[in-house]
Structure formats: structure tokens, C-alpha cells
Amino acid sequence: MIVARSYVRQIAAGTSPSDPAADSRPDDYSPRDRWGHGTAIASAAAGVSNAGSVTINGMAPKAYLGNYKIYGSPEVNESPSEDVLIQALEDAVSDG
Image (cartoon, rainbow, N blue to C red; front, side, top):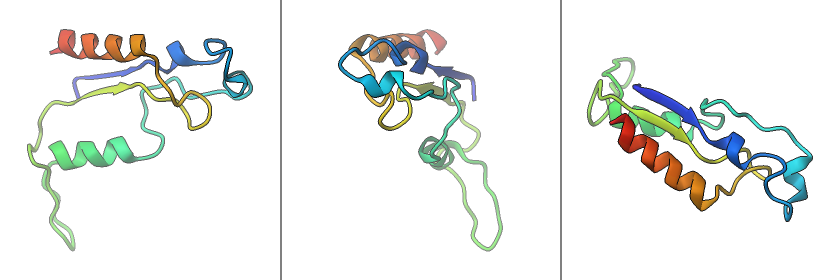
């Protein structure tokens, strides 16, 4: 992985007056994958060959990946704004 960024802090508590739940629960601001979906997709894309009872490898083993987390926890910060999406895309381009 070449980069790991989180934009959850930008959409976190206090930024959405229409969503009181955003102010009532904390969220995970790290770029860590909490649910496993991103990890599974990264493995399918760039996983190194691993032989066990079944041999698994990604489409482009050892490729460099970028992680740009734009969604927070379900029912807390699950809707990134347009400016967060644009910032993540601009950062991805800048990061190469």
C-alpha cells in the first residue's frame, strides 16, 4: 500500500445539523477497514499468491494500492459530502 487516508473526521459529529445521530456516537477516524469489504477487494486486486487448501492470488499481485476512506460508521457518518469525495479524488491523483 502506498497511502492510507481517512476523510471521516470531515463528515463527523457537528457537521450535519439535520442528523442528530452524528453527534450522539463516536466514529473511527483511522483509515482502517472496519467491516472487511475494502480488505477483500484489495486482496482480489493485488493479493500475493497464497497456497493452502486453495491457491488464492490477486489480479495484479504486489500492485501498489491507495486507501481513501470516505464513509464512516453506519448510521453515524455514512454519507460523505461532495467536497469530501472531491478531496479524496484530488488526493488520489496527487498521490499517483
